[in-house]
Image (cartoon, rainbow, N blue to C red; front, side):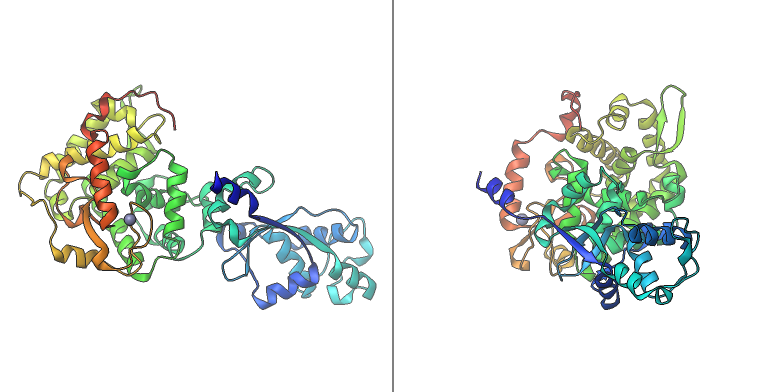
Amino acid sequence: MIETEEKTKRVFTDKKDFPLSLIKEMFDDGDIIPQPDYQRDYVMDNKTASRLIESVLLNIPIPTVYLCEEIDGRFSIIDGQQRMTSFVRYLKNDFALKGLEELPEINGKKFNELDKSLQRTLKSCTLNSIILTKESQELKYEIFARLNQGSIRLKPQELRNCIYRGTFNNMLEDIAKSNKHLCELFLEKNKRKNYQEYILRFFALRNFTNYSSSMKKTMNNYMIKHQNADNNEIKELKTLFNGTIDIIKQVFGSTAFCAYDRQKSQFMNKFSGSVYDSIAIACSMFNHHDLMTHADEIRKQVNDMKMNNPTYQDYTYAATGSKNRVIGRIMMIYNLIKNIIGNENNHPRTYSKSTKEELWHNGYICPYCKQEILSIEDAEVDHIIPYSKGGQTIMENAQLLHRHCNREKNNADFESTDINEIELINKDENI
Ligand SMILES: [Zn+2]
C-alpha cells in the first residue's frame, strides 16, 4: 500500500514549451542528445522541412515531441528528432525555404534573409514537449509504451534503446553490427533492432530458474540492472554470447533456430525465438570442446526432438512466454545434450575457490535479488541449473550470488516444481 501511495505521488512526466531559439541553443550546448540510428533513417528533406517552418509561421500546431531526462540532466529525444533538427538547421541558415504554397513570397530565403519580424516570430515560437523525468527511471518503459500508442509507435527494443541507454545497450548495438553469423542464423535482416532484442533475450533468460512469466518485464529488468555495467562485465557477456553463437553455427548449421512444421513435414525457413532461446541458453552451459566433439549426435537428437517430440513442439509453439514452457524447453535441450556428453567426466558437486575468483568483478549484480554484490567475501558460487537437477559443476554453469540469496535460492529450489516433471503440468497457461 505504502509503495502504491509513493508511486502515485511522484511526478514522472513534465510538460514544457521550449521556444525554438532555446532549442537551437540546447543543441549547440549539447544539452539535447540527438538519437542515433533508427531516427536517422528518415531524414527530412528540405521541402518537407520548409513546410514545417511554414506551419509554424501559420500558427498550425506541430505534434508534441517526447524527451527523456537523463541522470546528468540532459535530454535525449524519444520522438521528434526530425522536427527539432529541421528547426535547428533552418535557424542556422543551413537551407533555404522551398515549395511553400501558402507563403510563396519567402521561398528561396534562408533564416537570416527573412524580415526581422518573421525571424522573431520563428524564434519565439514554442514546441510542446512531454518530458520523462529522472524519477521515472523504473517506470519509463511502461510510460512510453502507453504514450507510444499515439504518434510514436516504436518497437519494444527501439524503446529500450532510448530509455536504457548505457554500456549494456551499446554492447547490444555492437554485437548486432559485428557478429557475422547472426544474419545466417536469424534468417532475416536486422530491422528495427530485432537482433538486439534477440541478444537481450539470451542474457535475460539465461538465469531462467528465476523467470517469472513475462518476457517483456524480464528483458526490461535485465536492461535496467545492467544498464551501466562495467568494462569487465561487458567483455564477459560479449564473449559468452559470441562464443555461444559461434559454436552453435558449427554444431547445428544455419537451421539451428528453425522450428519444424508439423503440417508440412519440413523445417520452416524462419527464425523461431523459442527454439533459439532453448538451444542458445542450453548450449551456453557447456564448454565448447564437449559440444564440438559430440556435434553430430547432438544435432541429430535435437533435430529429432524438433520433429517428433510433441512436448518440445508445444513448448516452442504457443504461449511461449509462460514460465513452464520457458524452463521446460531449455531444460529439455539441456538434458538432451548432457545425456550425450555429460557422463564422461564426473563433476564434483562444489566449485573451487578459483572459479569464484574468476567470476568475480566489481559491480557484479546478483542474479537472484538483482542487487550489487559489494565484496567477494559476500559472494558464493551457485549452479545456474541446480546440481540436483543435473546441472554440472563447470564454469559455464556458474554464477555468483549473495551468501544470503544462495541459501534462499537453495531452499526455494527444494520446494519448487521439479523441472524434470514439468511436462506433467497443466499446459493451458498464457503469456
Ligand atoms: Zn542477492
